[in-house]
Image (cartoon, rainbow, N blue to C red; front, side, top):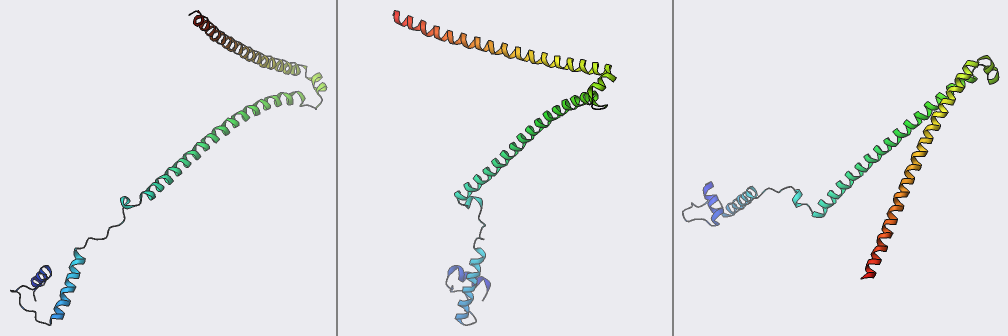
Length: 188
């Protein structure tokens, strides 16, 4: 049997009259025919495709998107909290450095005055110029700080007074407007 005859049998399903008779038993011919049909089906069948994103369940897609968004939001909040914490810590450290500097300055002037023997009166009698200089420095520093406090208190008082005047003026204006409106409506 020729290959063209076998393919013709597969396509036509029957033997044609012009086809030569097989040279073996008909059961082996049918068996070969069946195997050939099976092989042809397997060869021409579409290959199984892998599951793509479009074939996935919408619930799975939404769940994945929600999980990704949640993770991204959590990472953003964590980063924001870290930045805020760093800023607060930096501010605290800067303020602590200012206090340390002020303490060091204060400690240096105290140590200078009390350094020699721990007895200030003895030190003052031995070093009157140094004690006078320390007193003048302390006086000028205190006066400078008091002037700054006085200016701040004055500015705060001024701002509070102006704010109170503005509030009172606004309240008086609104009350006068309402009273005038009542008078006008009553005159109609």
